[in-house]
Amino acid sequence: MKKRLFILVEGEDDVRFFGRIIKPLFVPRYDSVEILPYASIKRQKVNNFLKSVVQMKNDYIFVADIDAERSVRDKKQLLYLWFPEVSGGNIVIVIREIESWYYAGLPDEVLQKFGLPVFPSTDGLTKEDFNDRIPHAFDSRIDFMFEILKSFSPATAVRRNRSFQYFFERYYLEDPAALPPHP
Image 1 (cartoon, rainbow, N blue to C red):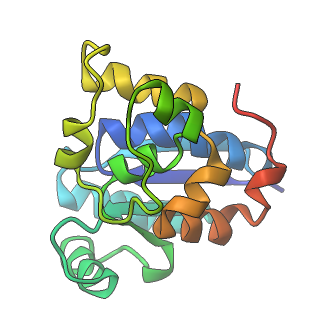
Image 2: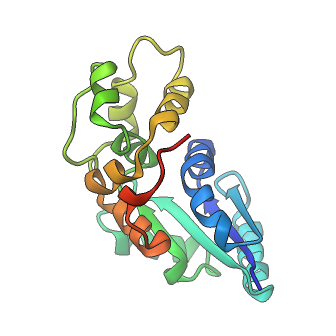
């Protein structure tokens, strides 16, 4: 019997990314996959929700940016303080921020099309770095993010971002190059 998967993410940029790129990878394994932004919910409600997910024997993934923390371990320690119900095995830390995952998945030809630099690694890319690189052709950062999602390449992202690679290998367990092109 299949069960439900809840992916708890920080905010709306994460919801867009996980909804378009990650959710389809999990749909065949679960009866339902839901993405929930937790940053705007009171911590006690998040903790109660995590407790109920476990009690119902469903699965969850708790995603957080590393932000200014020195290490994944430090970020996890902070999360344990804020969310005592979270299990360490369910936490995935995005390095540095979700924008680094967006940028990591841009194929070289799309970067070239927009006049953007190719980075061998986006591990250090911050929200501010990302915002500074938004081409003038886009009315907003959200428009640019939607454009990225249209041509996002998991195989490219796996090569360019270690935390995306970790996530992909940990949960999807398939060669990203074997994935069909993103519609």
